[in-house]
Image 1 (cartoon, rainbow, N blue to C red):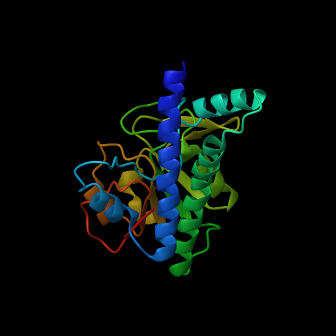
Image 2: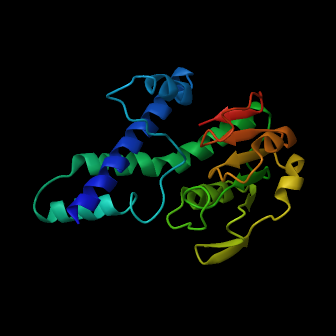
Length: 220
């Protein structure tokens, strides 16, 4: 059991570190994805982790917290686990903040803006949405009184806080109606060049459009 917890905690802590680096890069006006790519050119001693709008699934967000709880009962303070949890759980709010910032630059308020989330699962090409950060981003965007749709080929409908929301099945054919398209989960079946071409503004939280050059794209 502890082997499993070590592996999950290792990833949670390293994802938190790279998420914090992404926050710093935004403050510095740098591209975290370029930084990671350059660091990855080192032939040894570096293992790339990638930032995102939060972490999901049943393992990484939760299992380290179980270990942390257990250690507290033994009068031990699990500082890495707690700090990683704080940083990772803050990423949905950072994502929403970035979207608001981008809309403001275009003279748009969040209220009444039309937004489209791409991907509701916690990782690509599956239907599992347990603990998905997309649900947190969706909820936070709703609180701004934006009009929020989602498109996920694996999730036709999703329940959040006791309410069922249905995906916008034809969203990819009507991208121009949205003030911003937000890539949260980068499913491989989506045509990203076509998505960027058809959108007014794209916030890419997963570097899904990494091979596309366009002033419409803004990365986490």
